Image (tube, rainbow, N blue to C red; front, side, top):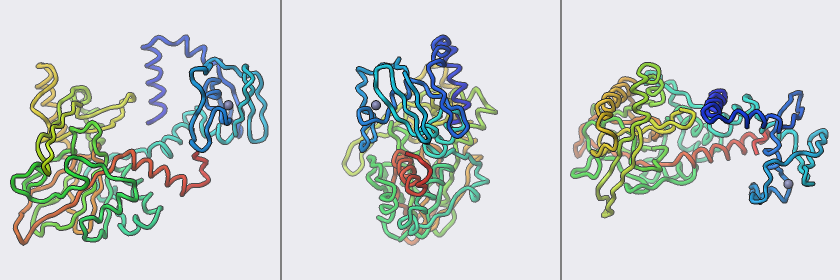
Length: 406
Ligand SMILES: [Zn+2]
């Protein structure tokens, strides 16, 4: 998230909540500390809350242990003594805090410092793309290197987080080959389709993905509140005939395009909830999944957090008012058509694992011929974004030991 934008939304928040007086007063409740030639400001309450002494902070648990029922949010410093590398603050209740200057600098409240932390540690900044740029943005990675090397693991996960897609090649032709990749990240996300799932032509299927006809572009499992973050599809057998190509579209690109060119339709898709659904039986287990959410989900900063889109998995109960139905369909059709227009077409080959962000990209597949001597078989698995971002941060600590991250 761009900090400038965040500051703007804070200004808006202050305006709408009429809390100008509070913020004016709070500007006096800061200490200015000179670090490496910069005047950095730190609020009293934040410094007191983040005291690193043994009574306030548990070192091995890396956690705050302040008794918050007795915490005084109006604590004031009585004395501030700055040394060469640290600063000591004595509070009005007699408690003493020591802070390393480097530690404070990394946590400073300047936009520059906060942006740096956000992009380097919180989440890498995403780059959206049009399908015609696909070959340029889709990083190629090697299965064995990811299994063996932290650098290769980092590069692959970084690519997936920035572009929402990456390709792994040279995967062994085994049904459990993606297990090794998933284990390098953490663990998989299980759903009612199993820990892993097989995508191939199946008569009387429980899911339309298991047919050889055109599979319209969609996100997987939008009916999950905790929707699987990343989809991995290992191509074990690819059809030798025409068809069977994957279609991929970056909805962050589409959403931005709609915001600029079709603002009303964009507004509708970000506000109107529809119901996503999956009802059936898989391996003898009944399921009845429902979840209500807009197609384009935004956070409090109006940034896209999640996309939901699936023609078969949208239920026929419309939870909104009668007069929003037609405008919603118009906006949804536009979104779907734009994604088809912006999509990349790409046919995986045996040994490829196509990895993509399931809450950002739409994916689909062109129809293909399925005969006993010419089949197509993929093994799929999911991993959540929590595990991927966590692994990326752990790798950053390991690979960039001097960055002072922790
Ligand atoms: Zn303390």
